[in-house]
Structure formats: structure tokens, C-alpha cells
Length: 421
Image 1: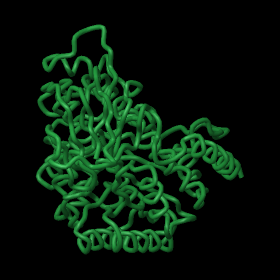
Image 2: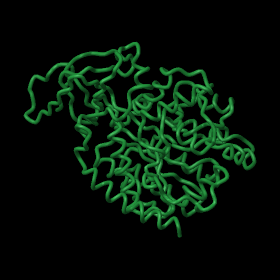
Image 3: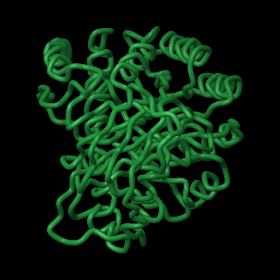
Image 4: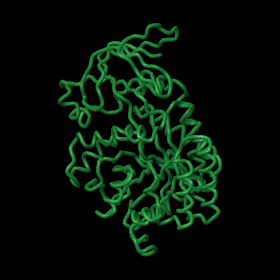
């Protein structure tokens, strides 16, 4: 058990500030209390939070941990001219080069950075065509080692032939028979009819949803109309995907109004990724017509959800009538998604503690002003996941960060050498 003494708790939905001590239980489904237990455990951890703010921790609704070793990597000699060339010349070369050591190193780096940025839950979308079997366990074990909760899937696709698609389906079936996860698909334009059918059947078998890129670039919609005579959302609807519970559609930039209505009527959630979309030049998301089930992700760009929320506000307000409150709501919607789908690792005992010494007053009324224009992840001092202290005074408690990064640099050089071949 952990006792956070003398802190100020900020309620994540109302921003009410409550000065108090918090007693945090350990375990999935556990919670915290505003009064001490009847029996104080002998292994109690007490942290003085005088002058600190305590909030619920964050979650990332769409991540690619496999990209963690790519910062600073060599660029292609001829720069990609469009999104499809970016996939072909960069990301499909990267994921095809991954082996077990690189996958594990990438997952550890992602979990370490997520934890230090106050993110205790990551929904990840993985791809490693040359190392499929067992890849999800490597990621899950690495996340568990750091103490970060997760919901994983493997990116099933036909771009590597029927053998690759079959192996992706098999890895998904193997993983879901042992752990909670999702059925992953790359995108409509790399998934054939048979693979789509089998993926939906698999999701139905394990009572989970499909996690898939949707209309990230206009090429996805163009391919679908030319190949199948319908839009991406219409194709997925006719295949039965919208009968599933808890789908996650990533991006959704080029959805039309009819597609948005189809999605809004289903139990499908959008995961939007402003930093990545701006980097790839594919457009800016607008949630008009989609309803409230919109979450924030990072799409492999970084692991800082506070930064992701700022980009969503600064960039998104020119494309729809959003407010800071609406963007913050989208940042927190992952909690509602996980609760609705009864996913472990989302209980009230996931917290972060800020040491934020602002030059201006922080009140319930102006909290959002501080969130978007003052607070950032460098103020995070402690992070609690499932009632366990995984970051204390800015340092990880379960793994040695220096060792993780040193080993990651070795694997990064191996990856970079392979993609130059």
C-alpha cells in the first residue's frame, strides 16, 4: 500500500481540488481511499506530496512500440513523395527488419518513456513480418517488467502474401487464447476479403474488437472504391465488423459524412494521432459527425500524451469547433473505453503526482489553461500503476533505465544496418 500525504487531488472529470491524504491499494480493480485503513500494513510506502498535485494517470489509445528505435535513423536516399511511399521506403522496411531482440528493446523503451510521462496504459498495434510468432508475448512481458498496462494486437495484412496473413492470424489466436488483446489489421488497402473475413471471425470468437488504420490517407479510400466499389467504412460494415464490440479505428482523416454516421452508430471508437498526421502530411482530423467516442494516441511518434493533447488542441481547433475541455475529454476517453470493455489495468489506483510550482494560481476554473499552457510531463515526479509505484522521484523502480537505453542503442544500430541492406 502507498500513502500519498498532504497532496492536492484533482478530480479528472470536474477538476475539483481536494487537499488530503490518499491511501492506494495494490492490484487490478483496486482503488484508493481518503482515509487510512483499519490496519496499516508493515510495508507501507509513504510519500510526502506537500505542494504536489495528484491526478489519474494517462493512457495511449494508439501506439506502435516497434518504432521506438527509429529516432535519428538513416533516411532513404530519395525522399518519399507521398504517404504510400513513406510506408514502402521507411516503415515497411523497418518492421520487416525486426527480430526478437529489437522487438523487446523497442517495447522496453516505449514502456519506460510512457511511465515517465505519466502514461500507465498503452494500446499497441504491432508489426514484425519476419518475426511474428511470439512477438506479442515479447511486448507484453517487457511492458509488464516496467509496470505499464497494455492491450496488444498484431497487424494482420496481405501485403506479405497469404503466408504472412496466416501467420498473423495464428499469432493473434495464440495470444488471445492466453491474454486479453485485440485483433489487429493494417488497413483496408492491404487486407483482402478472405483475411478480413477470418479476422472478424477471430474477433467474434474471442469477444474482442478490431484495431485497424482507417482512412489515414486518401489512398486508402481511393483503393477501396476502385477495388470494392465502396468506401472503407462501408466495406467494413458489410463484412460484419460493426457487429463487434470495442473496435478501434485509428486516424479517420478522410472519412466522409456517411462513413462517420456508420461509425457513430456502432460500438467503434476513434483513436486520433495529430503529431503523426502532421508529420506525414496526410491531413488534420475533424470529429464532426463522429460523436463522443474519440480518443488520443501517438502512432509511434513519441510517448508523451500531454504533448499529444496540446497538439490536438493547437492544430485541431482550426478544423472543428472544439474547446480545451473537449480535447481533454478525448485525452481521458481511453478510461471510458477500457471500462466499457472491462479491460484490467484501468482502475482508480493508476495515478501521477506533479510537482508544479506555477507563477499563477491553479484553480478548478482555470485548470485547462494550466494543462495546455503551463503543465507538461517534466513536472511528473511519481507514477503509480495498479497501486504499485513504478516511478519515484522521476526514477523507474522496476527496471534500470540506463541499462534499458544502453541495450536499445545496440539494437538500434543493428536495425539501422539491416534497413540499409
